[in-house]
Image 1 (cartoon, rainbow, N blue to C red):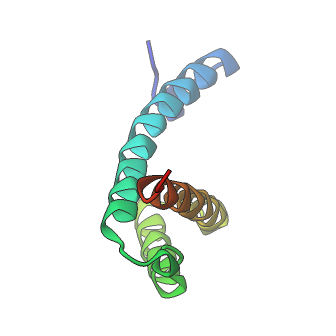
Image 2: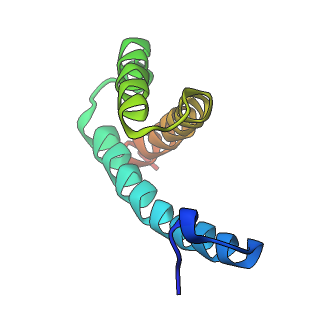
Length: 102
């Protein structure tokens, strides 16, 4: 049984909760990755894959949502910056794969 964090009394209970959340995060990140693949398919110019303005827009929205949800900005911002960086790398690979002529 997965307990709410506030109800955990042991590290085993905490770990069960963290492991369950990790599985949920994987599902959500997989859905996000699908949008990166869609972006790679839609964008006609490889130079538009990395969009600094959009990155900062996303970070701004994430920080606002984190504050509203009670998530530390010290966790949210670096996690999303890394997620964005990895997503861009994935999108570049997808963009190239879609347009391979060999």
